[in-house]
Image (cartoon, rainbow, N blue to C red; front, side, top):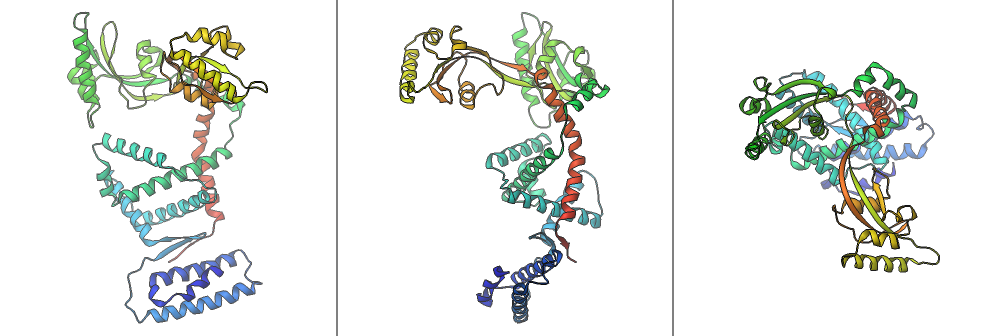
Length: 468
């Protein structure tokens, strides 16, 4: 309660009705909170301080009557050590009503008010957990959220600025909302992932079940534009296909209408709709394109013996491919030891780098100089990489070096390196991570149920008072 006393030294001119109400509510909240914790009875110091402070606030309230009464923002709920203002709820109601109207739906104001107040209370409780655990949203995360929202709006023929106007938001308001959503999402994932544990036996049971077998057999709902071509005109047909593809990237462009207009395939009259097909029902050429698409994406034009194709993936059901970038990499390693210092190792790798710049062969230099015995006889070859196989310094250098090029010298916990990229490729490593995908799938299935249980526990165990 000592935190209330400095206000006594403030002149009346710095206080208004709003300030007085806040302090009064905080004092009353503290009284109720201590009563709630059953520790008020024997606390003489708190009793005395509260009495003095309440008398002072009453004096201020009487003094304030001589001034004109302001329109003030009322407090409608006390949540732990925080409060919710009426203006916050009214803004949330206005925004929600605007969204419901856009969707052609309605909800009674009374129900909406109750639901949204509970929503605000739960948000406050989760943000309080984030604050206590130093969970934040960084600028890059907020920027990505803005980009995703902008992209979704543009795909529906709207803009971010129109969205802000419809919700009566400033850009700063929107950024704060994105930040809160990101933080709450982190809190929820952190808590629920600890509460949901998927065992290896559960993974095995799922994979052997009918649902698991269906999941292992993906189905694709596809759209298709086909332009037949011959050896003579295939370049011209590809140019036309690229123009069609460019038009499909524009907002509000309907793939089915484009297929009706341009496609010469057997399903053209149906807007290019191929329906829902199993993986084995599609040609491998189509699968190689689909593997890199997300739902709603359109492939770049690609050739077959018959002509040029453009695919749209409307929906993928079942297991998704896990596509990773892989690098066929060689390296030269110079280790440090008690007899070979850090400075000596750095000087040696620098000399080798100079020899490479002067045109000497990487394989030969690796065979002669690398301290990595396992790759020495193969000219420093490490083969095709797998995600997480190498230490971060090596991964970073590998990803930033172009095919057919060698990196600058860099150090890791193993010593000093120079690497060379023989080749790159994209590979589906689904079989390698299948069990992990099943665990994630089962965790997602249980997430919402467990989240609702936890939110109810959070609400039940918190100090919350809704004011009339």
